[in-house]
Image (cartoon, rainbow, N blue to C red; front, side, top):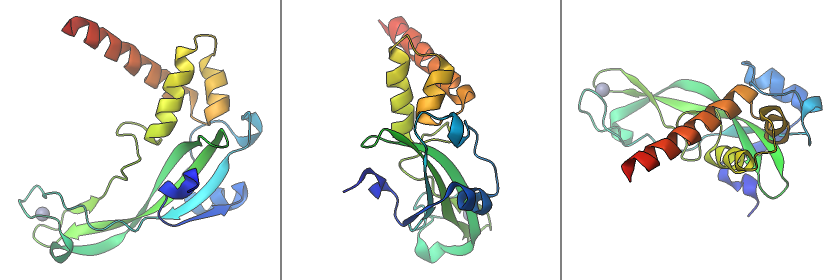
Length: 168
Ligand SMILES: [Zn+2]
């Protein structure tokens, strides 16, 4: 299976079509500034209702939710086979709780909890950061992640190391 197989239902598009479709601008270097051009994907989320419990106490299973429009999640990913950035715009189903009307969206498993990027893209940045010779800009050029996110990831991994040392 190709590394793009993590997306349930995807279509590769041109950079122009991607920009047209995904409305909000994805942060990060433009294609010409990247080491290798990014792959652009438009994906449709086909995951079922979250299955978690709503703040009102209702379990969010299929019978307890109603479809409530869609929203887009834009993510930067990294293709480990081709060593190229992937820019993905995921169209997600929004669900509404039948009991209290609160809306919910399932966070894709492959999304990093704090960044507009996939877990494997963040892992790639962490790996490149350990090679101390690369600047934030250079890492951004290779991975397609915004330099601000690269510096955030760096700060977080330094903080993790301090936390680990304090635990000893
Ligand atoms: Zn509810």
